[in-house]
Length: 206
Image (cartoon, rainbow, N blue to C red):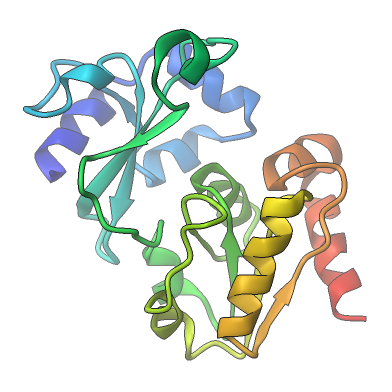
């Protein structure tokens, strides 16, 4: 898997870099997360050629898995092309994205719904992991976060996000939801910058 991620990282295109910049992802963040583009696909990855590769890294930066994000600009990937906007490897178990944050955080950690939201939080100095999708939280995930005194949960401002926050909060008594209103973490960052994200945490501490 790490060989595939290294190959895709080296093949990051200007179009993919522009896509990431539009989402607020800096070049440094892209490098840290080893983001790339599927080029010369490894076996089993052929259907994702041209897609963005989002590696799932161990604490030492080695890749253990990868998810794929269509960046072709389709209006509706599933309706028009029969695939999701995000795709995982077949039979892949539910994983926590960006394990390195658990090892670098002090006594507080942040949990986002999606990988890009976690990247933004880490980029602004808030150590964060992500669960891929509002329904992706599993009971065993809480063991990874049990040592933190506060777990901030960033659920999207919709019904699925509310259920995500509630599910994590039921599993961990030190969890507290962050009240997003403009949109998800990325949308809030693009609209209000780093200060807007920190203001939401301060509001949650009141």
